Length: 134
Image (cartoon, rainbow, N blue to C red; front, top):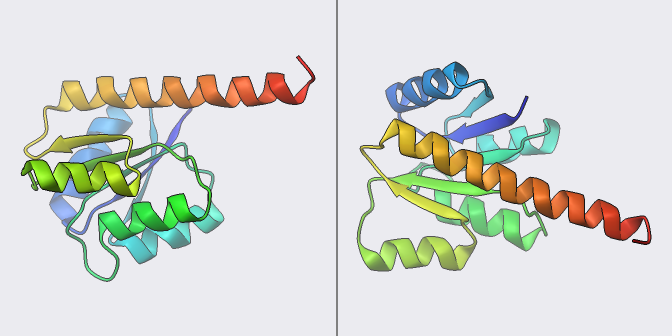
């Protein structure tokens, strides 16, 4: 079972996302801001991060940048109300893998998550086969 971390400061949005993800067979951990998300990532194996941009303490941009600066290849789906092209571009420049705007189409989000996890699995399998001398 894949484990997804939701970094979102809005309690109701976290609850909705958790329910949708759980109904689709994912294990879910929640964090109320970027700092809390980093604490979870230090202690729990996470397969994918869903991050809001506008969070207190450490926003989604800085959270993603921190992950990438540390060498992490964890798939990141930015889920935010920010819709301007320059905001989306900034998200990709700091290292997000995909970007969706709220209100979210739940079916599309699940399809995007499956695609991100599939790509991450392919990369991991490739690294493992390369490590075996193949």
